[in-house]
Image (spheres, rainbow, N blue to C red):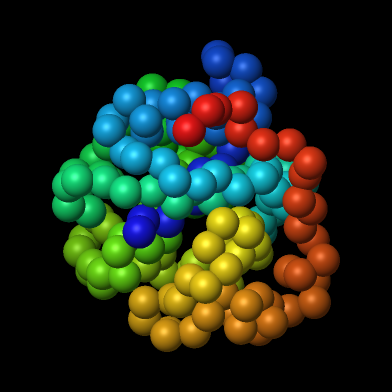
Length: 171
């Protein structure tokens, strides 16, 4: 299974943060990804600059009949369609899609790193995964998502809110 994380902390020409994530998922479906599960929305402060708008994130569990490089190109195209511009690292963005895990494969190339190199330290990645795939094991660290969450510092564990709102897409 493939784990993606989709985030947004800016409005776009398509609407608000919720809309941006929903459109990204629609575009993933159009690109022939078979989505199995989508987490609730999670909200977190922007990191490292908390003066930026809060982020919304969802986790997506899916299948794809292609290699990680093709998926990466599809994702970059979707981000661009929604209006993502090349900015400085950690700046606000209308859409950010990360490949967290690709069938437990380890991929290290100039432009793509799977599993995502900081996924095990990010509350907005781990909590959605726990919701949609509670038995997930990090392909490199060989640790269950619950153990990784326990290793987060207290601030990371409390600075995340699961919203009672789902992506409005029928699977």
